[in-house]
Each structure stands twice: as C-alpha cells, then as structure tokens.
Length: 168
Image (cartoon, rainbow, N blue to C red; front, side, top):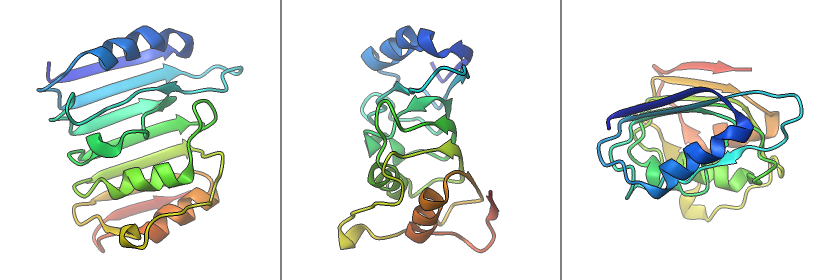
C-alpha cells in the first residue's frame, strides 16, 4: 500500500480509521491523507501516532483535526506536511511538542500549518543544543496560525532564501 486517502470523514467516525492505522505497519506507504469534516461542536482532535518503524517510507502527510505530533520519530523522512486545524485541546498539544516535531524534519520541502493551536502558546523550553534547525530543502512555507506559535516556529527554523513564504 503506497497511498491512502480518507476525505470528508466525520470526526466522531475517525476512531476506526485511526485504530486501523495504529495496529498495522505500512512499510511502503508514501502518502497519507486524513481529512475530517468540521463540526461546530467539535472541540477535540483525533490522536494518531506515526512511528517511523510502522511508516518508514512516509513522505507526504496531509491531515485535518488529527493530532499526530506526539511521536516525532516518524517525521525524519517527511517531505510534505500539510496540517489544517489542529486545535491542541483534546489531546493537549504543547508548543514544545510542536517545535520538537519541526526540528525532526530536516528533509521537509513543503510545510503548511493552518489553524494549529497549542494550549500553552508561546511557552517553549528546549535544550540549547536543539535551538534551531536549517530546513535546507524547504521550498514552501505557509503558516496561518496563532501569533505566539508562528513566532516560535520562525525563531527555530532557518529558511532558505529561495523558499516561497506565506504568513497570515
């Protein structure tokens, strides 16, 4: 299985999908998309772990309303990451967790974060050795998120001069 796409999932029905992904290994998967429909009363995201042992070839991840930042080991091989609406409430997302995940993406080419929130916006404690990462392969950066998170991300990454950047 090289590509898997779930679109227009109702958030409350994502559990079977995430359980399927959580109990199986996908050694050949390059592309994973999980897009959920937004509902007015939804205040939580679905949690998904993407350890590199189960997704060793994953290059593109696109998701909405899915919190997957907990295990950054699966991010080293990512080339494209597009996240739309990660509320960071249930389960809780910390700014440090988000920044640590970004520091584990040295090969990222396209990074798009839209409406990504953390409950502790702006409070980051990282060891001095993990202060910044040069994203040498970055071609496109699009951030449309809370100001403290955007500032924290921008202070931790080195963006190539030729990269297309959009900040909102």
